Image 1 (cartoon, protein in one colour):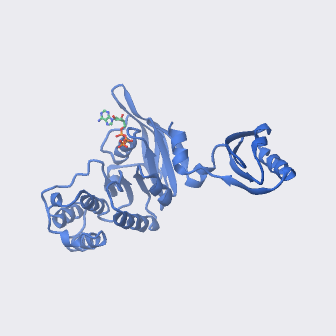
Image 2 (tube, rainbow, N blue to C red; image 1 turned 90 degrees about the vertical axis):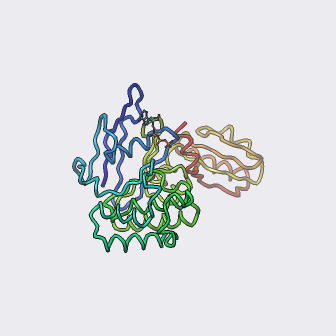
Image 3 (tube, rainbow, N blue to C red; image 1 turned 90 degrees about the horizontal axis):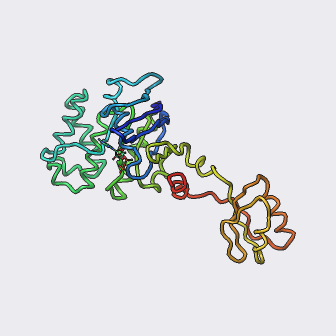
Length: 293
Ligand SMILES: Nc1ncnc2c1ncn2[C@@H]1O[C@H](COP(=O)(O)OP(=O)(O)OP(=O)(O)O)[C@@H](O)[C@H]1O
């Protein structure tokens, strides 16, 4: 498990990351979300040791992380950083060899990964000749060579078409199945919701929410939708409920006093037909807007 404890980074007067704490459990995918400038990249850079830590610490497998530990991590930095004027195969093999792989094994793995991402036939092309999405695929490959102990990926999905997203998802799942912790930042909440076991939401350098998607959707006041046979206007007079929306026979209610929804359903059945009474959980995008507002 990777632990981020009270990490702080200041740039002069600006506190870009302010006592951020969260865990990236082994074998799980943790999504890191937050508005532009929230501090995701700065946090990831501190985790990877490419930026100094002002305060706090990063722990790996229960002890302070070392340079050697980080060398075994796969990292996809925001600034990417492959060479535009070198053939893909050569530079990927070079990266793998720098990280200790034998030449034959490196070539084999690179070729497999290029095939897997649909760019096998481009292996001799210079990186700059590829479209941005294909360059992104190459960056992804670079970050998983050789098999990493943990993955820290800064917006790995940006610029990928749906087919490449699926290959990427499969690749990450391959890693989590082997018990590897994966942390990735993204602005694509639909993807985060689909993929992540856990979520960390940053706003203005602070952690404002952490947990599983289900946990986050269950926080806050429970909401219920009530659909009646007749007009639902009377729900406004019920104690312990906020009426969030009311249209004819349909009401959306937030419970401010535990049990108030039970009184509402009892009153509704007393008054006539009830067509629907259901708990409504907000979408992740709604929660995101609330916690980052
Ligand atoms: N080297 C630096 N010097 C000064 N300020 C910096 C530096 N790096 C980052 N910052 C500031 O730190 C804050 C956090 O930036 P960061 O890039 O970590 O955010 P982010 O959440 O990754 O944003 P985005 O989603 O846009 O990539 C911003 O206000 C940014 O301007």
